[in-house]
Amino acid sequence: QVQLQESGPGLVKPSQTLSLTCTVSGDSITTDLSFWSWIRQPPGKALEWMGFIAYSGATYFTPSLKSRSSISRDTARNQFTLRLSSVTLEDTAVYYCARDDPTGGMDYWGQGTQVTVSS
Image 1 (tube, rainbow, N blue to C red):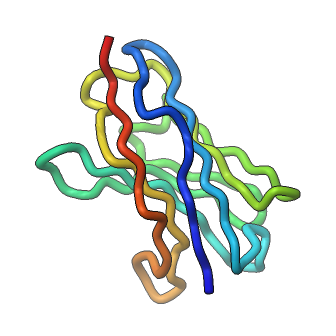
Image 2: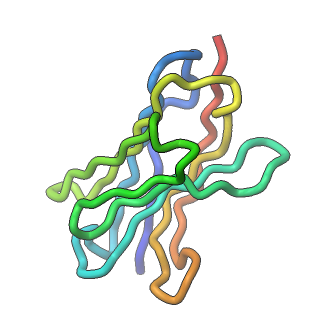
């Protein structure tokens, strides 16, 4: 069974960089044609897909976050890490990592982690 677990600080100050790691078990982040995403949900708002890292290591981001976002990976630990720079109060959200379903959407999700941006 595929499991994903987010980890990282729950509180980040404005203008700092948010860093979250997703640890995967039950599958490899280098499995052919696999894609691994970050999604967030601000309070009272809809889910927002942020970006993915592909099995090849290639990354892609939603245009509105592209300039502030990066995703890296540690294949030995089967982890991938989101970094979001210059955070503001609007980046407060529950952050999820997930595996993309080849037929659309996401088929496995982490439980989510709350990140609050506050001074």
